[in-house]
Length: 453
Image 1 (cartoon, helix red, strand yellow):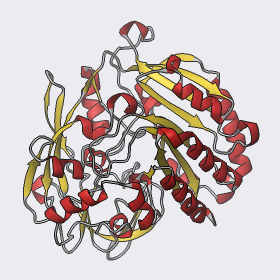
Image 2 (image 1 turned 90 degrees about the vertical axis):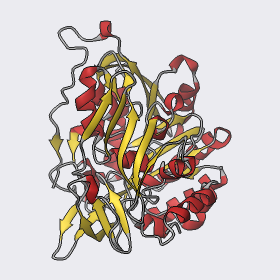
Image 3 (image 1 turned 135 degrees about the vertical axis):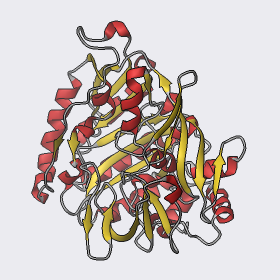
Image 4 (image 1 turned 180 degrees about the horizontal axis):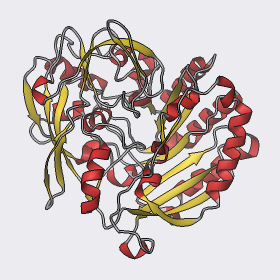
């Protein structure tokens, strides 16, 4: 088993899988093609799965077969004039960085881990710290080859087949299996980042920092203390960055060096007492102080974009019961109030977490089920504890009433009624899906839970 994969325990007949949150854990039959010609739906219900970095049940199929794309990871071609890279869908973001960053090319959009597949990035239409500037992943995809439910293939572009293209972008693998993908990379001068950390003593200060033009940057994200209360509720640190210029590279270091630090591993699941609210509160206080005082500095690309990738199996810190990541977005007119309500409710219940992220989104993309929309997005990791799902059910209602939505790639428990309130283009998606998969041969636990299959 790869050290970066979520839990996978063998049984006699099938294997048991989870998402990155280690909840839920379900059985599935497996197919593992060695070449693209072997990528196809199998049996009554199939789902392509890459690195399993979605958090909940989006890449689980307990009633059918998981078709693992991890061995379909070849880089097929690169055009240095345009930056267009063509690769198999099982290739990871790390594969692209390793091959192209030394040549001066970086990912146009990247989530918080480099250990996810290209196909998964398209299926979830991932976003990054630069959504307000560059949009989401699908905005930079030029084309892809899709294996349909009947086993046939189609080369899909946004110009020639916009319906299928934008249903697949953010469609959680339910329109077909992506076999290859062409992505337009971003030209950079160095592999270094010029970063500024700005501390905020409260949620209001953090909101103001995000809105202040003085802090405008190509990349920005705020860490938020999910355990603080009273006048310190929602305190945090705004972390903004730009690609460093050659004259900012530390003396003696190569401008386009890519040598990620050796990773450490969390060898076992931590006991439940390790995440006692008092321990998390203390850890958050130390982190707020340490990161807030860093000011301006230059660092390699890796710790800025992928700080958690330095610890293999970091998801084990939440124990054997796993955790939920709750991520939502709310539009500008309701964003501050919605974020405050969620932070306050989780903190009051002792469910606040160390891993809290607040970001600003730019314009909405074209994906029919894509998550980003203008406003603020908050993501919080919360351990599986008694009562947490009921609390999040109430937060779903708050988010839906505010005109927002929950991110499907992080979700493991959203109710169908709440989901249908959150995604206004849902019927368009269902029409495309019905046309390309009338027998529902493509399915997942998430799709069945939300009425998509």
